[in-house]
Length: 341
View 1 (spheres, one colour):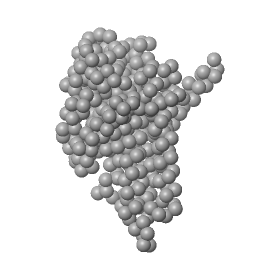
View 2 (cartoon, rainbow, N blue to C red):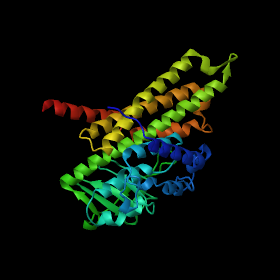
View 3 (cartoon, helix red, strand yellow):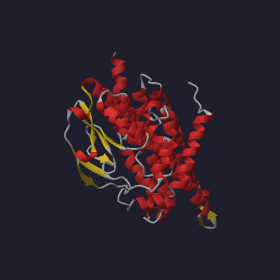
View 4 (cartoon, one colour):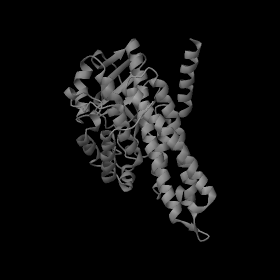
């Protein structure tokens, strides 16, 4: 298939990059690790002004009515700057889930989320901890064959540690009710599968941005650092490390864009594309983190060095919404099932 971003899509990416560059420099990310909410002051408001929360929502619900392709480009830039904001749960998962759901919960929450007046945290069945549950207004949670939208005030939260200090995780205790029900039975299972696809692609896009940043900053470092009278980057082994990481990222990025296209066009094989994208992006980001650490040498291990902010975000996101092994098994299951038919 022929695929290229439109000028409008590229403009959205450039706007997002400029926003994150201005609002989220490395020192703000570092400060978020010790802040009560794990956020960068003012960043969420800037994202709301850009319309990010409602990118996938219809116009009559306060949204921009764009597609997963444009959102993936924004999320990639979020990863590039390691911006601590939970765009994935609200914009990529909760909004489309509520958009497609009937009932009172949709009427209550969709416009609030789309316009940035409220935020969401999402956890499917089998996920033990909910990211950002303390600052979300609504928790979209699955229990068995039901999906509910729970007001945070009616849930009990218990904090859990995270390798990334800006990612606040919580175990959530909650009780369902008819008023909170979004979907049940077959409809809930389909909605959960769709939410998994969306979450996986959204995180994969962030991983691409994280990996690209780690490679770019490492290239700059090995050019500046000298040993034996030469730039470290001139050594063959260092070149090989960075070339391996670069190839992995450039091979996985098109898979992420393809998965976003599949979601936007409701392709029948979108789950395969989503899992392929997440597996490749997870592998690429982990490889980029490892190579960046090796090329930085001892300074890369220092907490004072900014590299760890990106590495730990990559480690956390590589396991979020299913790790590479889980998604490979999912793809294999689909392909084997299709072959059996």
